[in-house]
Image 1 (cartoon, rainbow, N blue to C red):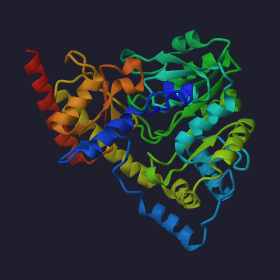
Image 2: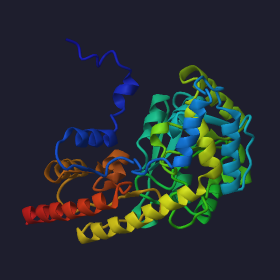
Image 3: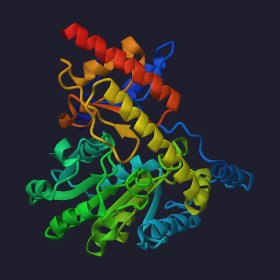
Image 4: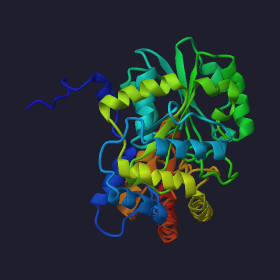
Length: 396
């Protein structure tokens, strides 16, 4: 019987399945006391006022398709939030599209902008969908491997060296999944100076974790530079900051022609985002700042506990200042990241993700999520120390 390999698109065959979901699924299939620190899933429940807004929308009969771009009330609320947080203005009628999560936005922008053979600069380690969406759109990923000694930030000289006459756009994702790296306004100024010299390059700024920044409570973004405004698309959403992963709601903001092209694809493939989720978003965008601060403070506490646990286990780790991930090194333990994570799950029943899933430069690292209860994080760190000690004894 055919395995259908010859019938599936060559591009799809070239893209590996997500390693994040693989370890999440393996953990779910195991019995016993399994702790999952693998997926970026907040353990918080969506704040009640946001849930109530969604419930009320059902009571009020909003059970039908919304406009393709989203209800104008939701688009206006999001634009008001962006104005409040970033001090920039967008037209809710033409410069925003409400999507099914931030991931749909990454797919839409790739299909809207890329012609076959176009190059897209991707800064690794990075979210697994970046390279995949470019490849699905028949683009060519051009990887910049960031370095720990540079705090995993994109350096302007690295960007300049990667640009060619085929470069279509740059994807920049900070705060970073998986490293937790943050780029400040000053860091972005140096990137702006390079991009100003290359006016044909579009910029895609993935800011899903913008509110989870432990250095500053004010997001820094390339959208704040007027000289880049007409070629920057922000991908954002509510999953991480507001604990709304299951609502599947995100948004894209940017130049009118690009948003129009993305909306055209959205019309045919998705049609519209969930109506109930949009009414929840109105409440989140208008009145959710206190909930964000409360969750951010708790994540910050968990971050410190996790970093101490990693140090106790003898693992060197870059200090993350954003998102809710740590990216410790396992170099010197005699195994690659896949083997480390598989053995840790089987032997100690803790699920984490191999660093290689986020790019070749992530090898000999692992990603650990601290979007889990403090008790689970503490117990996972106890098991991690036991595991590392066992490895060292075996190597000795």
